[in-house]
Image 1 (tube, rainbow, N blue to C red):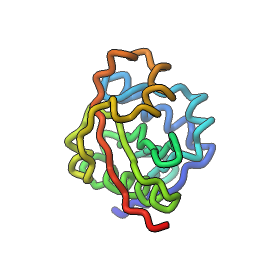
Image 2: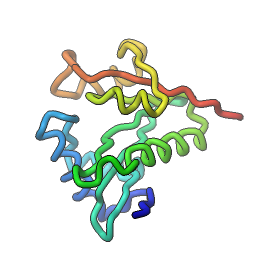
Image 3: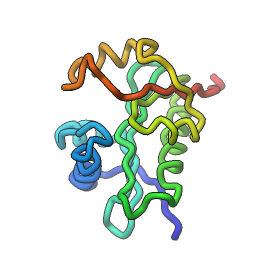
Image 4: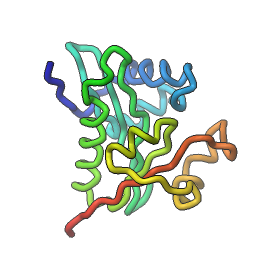
Length: 156
């Protein structure tokens, strides 16, 4: 089956919320409140099967030269079909189109992101992230996620 990555629509928010929090409940990613998903719906890409969201990821801009891939989730029955790779590619493509030089992620699954070309870094190398959003997290300052970055070549 062929899947297509598309920008999320407002009607996808509740399904995105359910998908993300399914994995958050298992301790595999951070939970996201529904209000945050609505506020940032323009950040999200989704993959649908019929009308159901089976995968999602968001590209969130943190600074003029820095964006984060967040909330990457693929339903359990849809894993191992390259959907995560397609979502990463969509996020990186959008970042490049915007002229963003560095994309990072915080994850419990660093091997997946390394397979996609990301490199491990110390979280201290991401000051805009740490002071811009992380301090709001219930796990701050004891974050156990792993930081990785991807450097884009952007022609200005």
